[in-house]
Amino acid sequence: MDLVRAEWTKLLTTKVGYWLVAVAALMAAGFTALFTAFAGDQGGPQGQGIPPVGTEAYGALVAGVPAQVVVIAVVLGVIGTTQEYRHRTATPTFLVTPRRGRVVVAKLVAYAVVGLVLAVAAVAATVLVATVYGGARGGAPDWTGDTVGTLLRSGLAVVVYTVIGVGVGALVRNQVAAVVGSLVYLFVVEGIIASVPATADAYRWLPGGALAALTGDGRGTDLLGTWEGGLLLLGYGLLAAVLGAVLAVRRDVV
Amino acid sequence: MEVRDLTKTFGSVTAVDSLSFTVEPGQVTGFLGPNGAGKTTTLRMALGLITPDRGTTTIGGTPYAALPRPATRVGAVLETAFHPGRSGRDHLRVYCRAAGLPARRADDVLAQVGLTPAGKRKAGGYSLGMRQRLGLATALLGDPRVLVLDEPANGLDPEGIQWLRGFLRHLAHDEGRTVLVSSHLLAEVEQTADRVVIVGAGKLVREGSLAELREESAGTVLVRTPAAAQLTAALTGAGAGVEPTGPGALTVTGLTTEQVGAHAFAAGVELHELRARTSGLEEVYFRLTSGAEQYAATGGGA
Image (cartoon, rainbow over all chains, first blue to last red):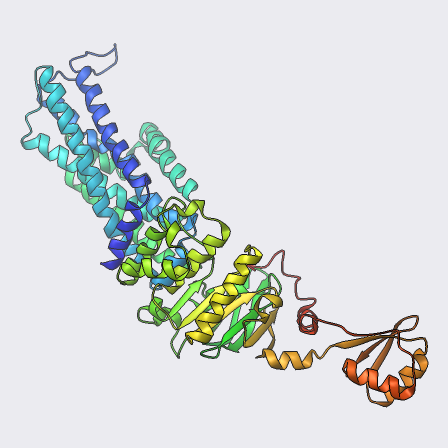
């Protein structure tokens, strides 16, 4: 527990954590505002358009917005571990706690909670904008049943991605490589895999596919079911955590 | 602290080779060797950060990683590492937390190293000397009986070195702590250390008290005389080693300046110069470690 609190102290005594939470809230608010502003727009010839405010579909769309914040969550988690190597504080950290596995476990626990804060910020921003702006345009989502479920699952995804980020950081250690690598993977690699027919089948088994399954409406044809997706995502989180912990224990700190 | 048979190879370079030595409690031990001799690697192995290929290090009979609450037993400064955006005081509070120590220890050690006025400033803006002090403060958090310092004088200005020497002396001689301090310069530890462990190319070259080393380094005496042959005969007759080092100049080993003077007087030889070659200790250190710098460029750590 001391170690978990030490991780929180580390985060709270630098600025990056505050910035990322602020960016996450702004991002969620921005996307929600965008969706609301263009709600009811029929889109171009091939566009699917955005459902009008007040409809169930609009509610589902908006409730999935916090899931966009997983990008920030990964970066936050990655920075949480890689900053120890970047600023060489891994040396004093592992001197104080020679059982390195405990440091990694403490980071995972601490950052799961930090991820929760990030999720709450994103969800709160989404709900606020959708209620106020959506209401002003004539139809705030009614926060019940499916909509709330999607909202909560989006938040859960943010927590899991934060944990994945911690694991990735422990694996890669080089901060720039880990951040850039994660972003390239999320924005480019998964997109390509999902759109190339030969590999599209594999997409559902990737974190992105699992995320879509978890936060979508459950009707995506090629995706896993909602809870299978959620479990798969948790599995990725655990895998990253275990690999990160094992490697952190084995590697020399030079 | 006991180091036994430590060995570590990085690729084709053997950074540390079957190294064994002992650090005596309550003394300052200087850990000397040229850059690349394996000092840092040895210290990191001793503290469980690098896994040795072979060998063990125990502190009071226990390996570092198995010590309960190690921060309260051993304090180490291996590098001045901190997040530049975090204040010195916050940096210390992080490690207070992690070590399960009360947060007021952060203020205690800041005062101890004289960094209180800068405690709330970001560590990224600290001068080199302040960074070294912050590193020392981190090591002192748990009030450990044993301190391990890797090149603490590196990058310090003369005033900082002066302060560091005084501080180490105070920690060891007034407070009775065991101190192991590495350096590539003998002069840095000459005034503080009781014992020295000298390594070269990863191997132990010499272990012993500084006094022993001093005796060995009695040094040489330089003499200039117009009667070199006559003086050489007189001095070799007295058992000294004499080598001509120039026209009318001799280097004498095994005798003090007083003895050389006395022999010259007795032999009625005229002298133009008679002086002791100083820094005999440095000379011995240099002789012991010469040729051991070959790993500086490729070795793992200084």
